[in-house]
Amino acid sequence: MTRIVAANKDSISEAAAMLRDGKIVVLPTETVYGLGANALDSEAVAKIFEAKNRPNFNPLIVHVMDKDSASALVEMNEEAHKIADTFWPGALTLILPRKENTGVSDLVTAGLSTLAVRVPSHKVMREVIKQAGVPIAAPSANNSGEPSATTPAHAAQSLGDGVSYVLAAGACDVGLESTVLDLSGDIPIILRPGVVTLEDIKNYLENVEIDASTKDKPKSPGQLLKHYAPNIPVRLNAVDVKEGEALLAFGSIKFMGLKSGGPVKDMPTSAFRNLSENADLNEAAKNLFMMLRDLDKPEHKAIAVMNIPDEEIGVAMNERLARAAQK
Ligand code: AMP
Ligand code: MG
Image: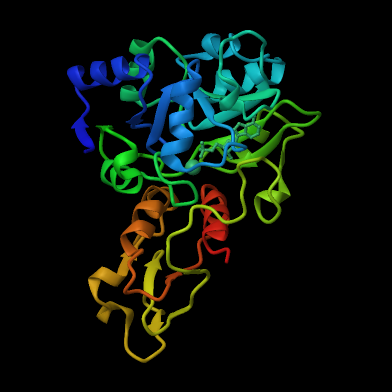
């Protein structure tokens, strides 16, 4: 049985105690819900991989309170300090060379010499980390390969009996996973786009590049081609809705029609969601995974998704959707 418990003083302390005790707990963050474990405890970290059915070559992000706690685990160069001072706490993960003898489990890094670190801004998550007193490894709280869970119910539904405790704090603000910026190589590379965009980072690092393979060939171990995927097919850049399809709209549906004739507004409400009627990209990002899960029903042949502008957080949404649509 999974307990879904609203975050308050008592439940936060309980979650922190469970983490110290080697258990895994679903935690709210500003990006997506995380499945957390004590990063120093290999047995606890192994439970994350098992509960998610996550391949063991896909490393985890470690969540800490502040830049000082991060620099205890990784070698922070000048660029890392600048980026951390600017974007932390927030939805940006840094890949840096890991320090030796920190106690971080080798399972976390999947044997790599680098470690992914992030300082989250979510108040509940921060309080949990503080009370647990250890770095928290936490990937998204869902079965590997599925859209990330952005609500407590979706996390519980996706992980089933694999998890016993969900600390609930409503829908996540950002709704997409953190931007992953690799500062361990010759040039800074964005391995995963997110709400902190290439343009944002360019204001501080001139030579940063976005990894072209975020679009097609994966480079980072976790950038598996098919990912974030519902059980039914996803069809992108839809300009109409085919027989039996559900529709994930963005903005106005005035010019969208059903292939079989008739307007989209006649579709059953169970087959229709709009990411943002006002075409607001941040609102759409917040809704993306939640609505993909809502429409992921066996009675639909596929999910037709309208075009999303490739700008600001739309870049990250399109990267996730391209993977969701992979066959
Ligand atoms: P998730 O935990 O599901 O949000 O995924 C974490 C992402 O960070 C995956 O894409 C991982 O491959 C990536 N990642 C974590 N650690 C590293 C690392 N040391 N080097 C490169 N990518 C990493
Ligand atoms: Mg994930």
